[in-house]
Amino acid sequence: MKLITNMILLLSALFIATAQAEDEEATAPNEEVIYVELKPAFVTNYQSHKMGYLKADVTLQVKGGLTADAISRHKPAIRHHLVMLFSSQSEEALSTMEGKQMLKEAALNELINALQEEGEAADVQDVLFTSFIVD
Image 1: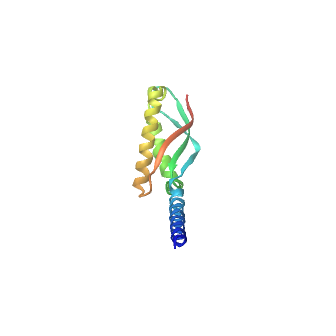
Image 2: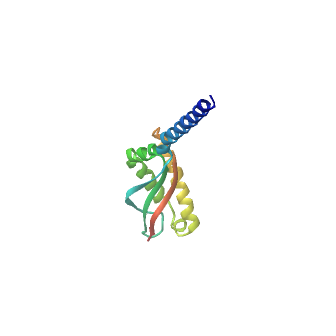
Image 3: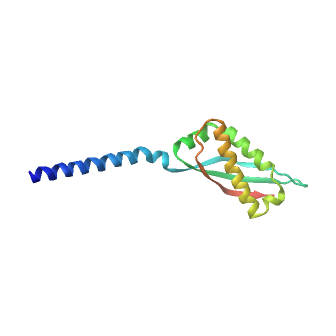
């Protein structure tokens, strides 16, 4: 009798552990961090008294495949929003670390708003400038 009770407890524990592992596997793909490169690089003029340009390579850190898929579907609209944001910057803002950090935060907000306007998942975690040239 004791052996049967122990076997039932062991099988129950095994079943619970298997069910938890399956639940974790089911949610894991949507929770993984994915990096999405926005190619080609952004090249645009910025607000200045002289002719100047900004060139930036941008990579997005997103959580889950739903947001990565949404970015792929709406890449032209997303690029438009970022070009408008980048071209509205002043030379002074682009030449300081504080200004670049503010631009990064503004780009993140712009991306989230653009995706939400399209009714899409907007789990963008970070905007990464992998190259940033101001001339």
